[in-house]
Length: 235
Image (cartoon, rainbow, N blue to C red):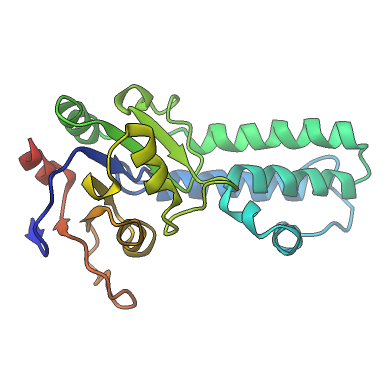
């Protein structure tokens, strides 16, 4: 563990999910590959000149910047617009968009959380309230960790995605504690460390990469660990 700043009293610990508690890269690549295949091969789409995912995303963003923070709603709306473009009526477009979205979330949630991560969360939960904070949309019940968190928060149109401070501030409100007494643990120098800093929370970088994570970010975490089990010292 590397300590850059002394920690205040910790009254709760928040965790990023993807790539912090588990390796998200293989499963999200699998889900995105399925998604792209469905865009190319879905019976309603084959043989038709339709807007691309990115084109529809840009259209949504121009109409409503905030929707991009909610990855679930954004993808649902993109699919809805795509089915509309394919000639479906509004109700049928909604039904098909929701079916495809739920299948995507199902595939992207087909992952195993390492035993080490679960063990750590169980130990820490005995002493601290735990919060899950994510910009993503993994199904935490399906991956088997929902019972380990007192609060689960994900980015929406009303709670902006990290590094905006919204999710950290909401966690403090839900737990009725000061945001400065939350230690946030995450792998991303921008969304997690800068985000925690902007909310005045404490931060811990889980740096499992061999690359320098700080080439473009000038904000250091309060502490840095190479593996989650180093956080056992908080007990």
